[in-house]
Structure formats: structure tokens, C-alpha cells
Image (cartoon, rainbow, N blue to C red):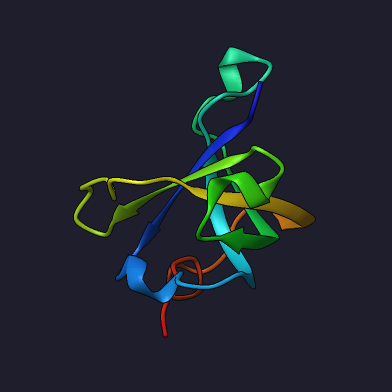
Length: 93
């Protein structure tokens, strides 16, 4: 079963191609229910096509909270820490 994550972005159009990014993600489908919505700061490959991301899904929300209609693929490469400063935790161009 694929893992599902969520992040917040200013504009999903910045995720048009496969790209390595440092992002803050929230877990939506953890093994232990108590850790749902735990935020992690990671280095990850983000794919516009969810099939490319080893079946792990990244749901994107605009900063206002509205969910982007299609999920993206994600492959987590490295844990960078428990959190990051707000200005660096969202996609920007």
C-alpha cells in the first residue's frame, strides 16, 4: 500500500518536472495512527506523475488550504530534521 504525504505550496505549477527538493511533508497514512499529521523536513524527489514515485503519493495544498486535484509522486531520499523555518518549508520558484 502506498504511503501518502501532504505539503503546502504557493503554486503547484512549480512542480512540473521531476526535481529534488527540500520540503516539509505531513504523513497521512502512518503505521502508528498517533503519528498522523506528523511533520517531517525531508530531501525528496517529486514527480508530476505519481507512478514514478514508487507509488508513494504527495498531495499538494495551496497555502489557503485548498487541495490540488491530482496527486504527485514522491521518493524520500533523506530525513533533514523535524522541522524547518516557515519561509523554507513551502515550494517557491
